[in-house]
Image (tube, rainbow, N blue to C red; front, side, top):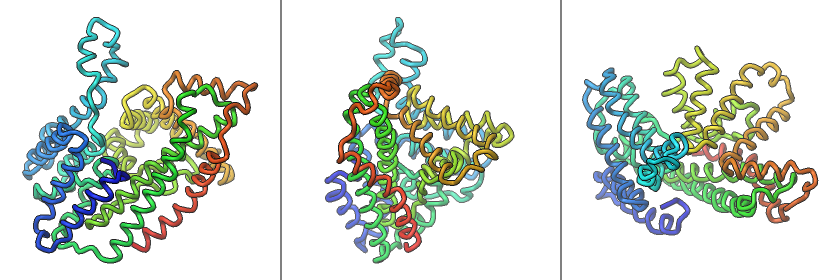
Length: 423
């Protein structure tokens, strides 16, 4: 189930919110949200819900005692099974087929056994969230023993389960503590409907329309000439942004209905002047997770270039299991490193030039998400053929939607800031 489905918007959400608001059911709200979240997630597959339940029970069982704090052995035991589950579902097929080349060897039967594993939706998100709790508890940043029902709501809460944001426990704690006392006000409802409505518009009207317009170029990547190639780069850049941004705004609105105030996950990233600033604005909760739990643990700035490259390679793999995602991560790592050592030169450029150059390079990198290597080669060959400058041009409707998306990146973000301040 996804947020823009009819069944979610007009059946699931109204039923859950109505039950949530019944005064006599307030003491049972944690159990209502756990049941609703597991139902929401279980519709994608019962065994997927079992993975989520197993992670919740395992990590809670190991971290519930104060003896866990500072105990490195228990920390490893807590985070190892969730990471192994993530590896099994998301990366095992890639390792067998693309790294070990099992598909082309005498062990092809082994490959067939593991090549059709169905990836549970959002497993990367809830794995990172459950691991963050385990690490924070180990560090003493969650000093108290958390009630199981609060922990289960924190990990499974359906608005942020599938696509984030990735919450730290301290960010969710105020809402969890007040869950049975929370009464939605008119301001809560207005803010929630604003976020949900705008998020749906961005997701359905812009991202999905741009995706539909790109279908012909995806199926025939070599058909685009230079002008069409520029359109593809820009259109896909805005599609991936508004798809994720719209979904994040819907999540913020849904959380507000139940008393949760989620952090922003995007802050005008395409207006960033350099790659470092971009990653402070794009998918902020993931960037913060990588910084707090990986980059700093590796030594941070003590080995800057090595650690930046390593964390971006891991970030690429987090987005997907494939060489194209690894190359995308390497591109961004090298981009950030290059900026670090040339920032005196970069920062002297006019602000508009910095923004335009940064946006162009970031948008080019998204092509690794759109095409595999063979398709990308066809696309670049078509774009680079000087004799096909005007081949397969986008039509007026496609250009109009692209223009609207570009304007909305600036206009709507300002409106979002005002909405956040007013709520």
